[in-house]
Image 1 (cartoon, rainbow, N blue to C red):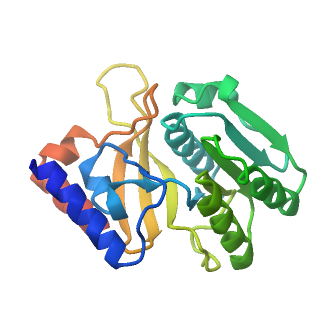
Image 2 (cartoon, helix red, strand yellow):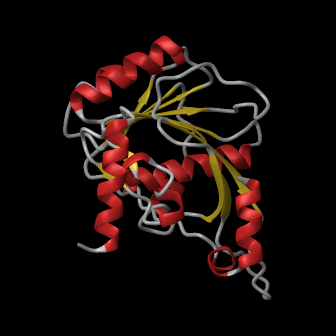
Length: 243
């Protein structure tokens, strides 16, 4: 048995022991440093996951594209619920999420967004359901988690303009992420480098918080760790210290 297969088996057993066994499969990032921190080795399908940026528009935009990259690697249509439609579809497409796959629900308020999410989660065959809200309650998160578990459809709550210093209310989400824009690597020429993000796993059921510096999604929704962090000992030490 290969080393990779052995590690995957061990992760699954640990997740089962800790009560976070995956019922509907996983979506790995394809980056061992990230996947190793997630129960089972990836984002759990048929579960609730929470994302946030900050009050800075650049951070909220980075979090949106990070989320779009995850959805791009899932099969099927995407239901995106929001109070008012202010998404820039070409940016989602650059992260691999083609506009033809996205169905927008302009609900008008946080309450209606959550109701639309819960209804959409009852229908299997959907890649994922996104809900953009400014805040939501623990009870609402439990309802979304139960609906996702029942149908196998993955739920994503995106907390818009979230204050970084604000303590979020308790949630039933399996993971909670915060994504912020970071400076691109200098190219030595007059051009713009690949976007970089500070990705923090603030909460994970059955795991510990961590943080990474990653390069933004490519056209297939895949992120990458900068080469300097992968191969540079000093950079790796800084990465662990930041976590």
